[in-house]
Length: 182
Image (cartoon, rainbow, N blue to C red; front, side):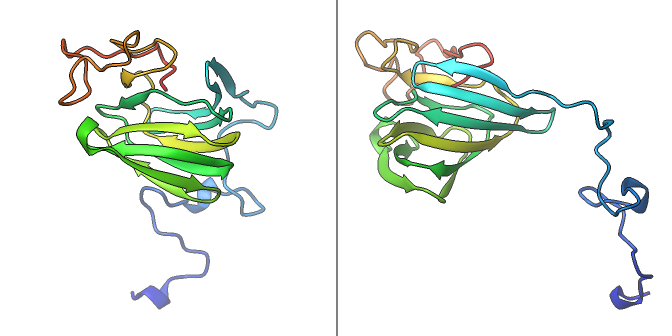
């Protein structure tokens, strides 16, 4: 049976596809929750603003980051976490690269997105108030801070990283801030 020979309404089975039993009478996907249950996003205050964690599953995390104008996240990298950032509102400066000696600076404007792969050193500095949508793998604890203006990284008092060749602490430990990251 070819592609065009499928019965009307047929949906192939498989990951990421809805089968007929997963649809309600109106043709909308069922949520698996009754209509009275909804989770509230979790707000985590930060020295640079806050993050709103609106989804956290075994497969992904969704966050809204609000970064105040002139503030910056840590210069950091992730060992496993893979993330994509989408600038909803504002203008920011992004430092990104394979290491301290390879950092490049670019400006991110409203509507632009960038993927940050594991091992990539990066820092966000808000030029204006920014709202950033982040979609990532679920490793919230996976943040290694290299530099941080708020004193949350090894060597933060001097502003120098512990291991300039990689940006990682010399003892190989993470400077994770619980399950809060950035």
